[in-house]
Amino acid sequence: MADDREKVKVLLPPEGDSEDVFFKENDRKLIMALREKAAKDSDAKYREEHKGHCFRCGTKSLAEIKRGGVTVDVCINKGCGAVHLDPGELEACELELKKQDGGFSKITGALSSLFK
Image (tube, rainbow, N blue to C red):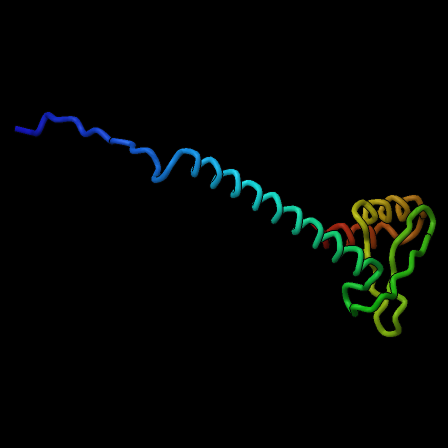
């Protein structure tokens, strides 16, 4: 016959004093908070140091150019000319192109298909 006994799992208290456990947990939380703050500060510092830098050539050569109702960042470094679009600027360019008549609808469709 099969063994009819039930298995029981026994949970023992953690090693050491409960006060030690409290302080270890408290220290762990403080260290995590400090690491998160350091990472946030580091990200903010990096963003500030690289503001206005071109992602393609790396130089600090971005200029804001306004055409119609849209403002985009363009690298003015000779030989680069990269166009940087902030969130929502591609859609704004699309709307601006749709307002104009001509062959711009083909360009709009081509731009939209690149990012879908």
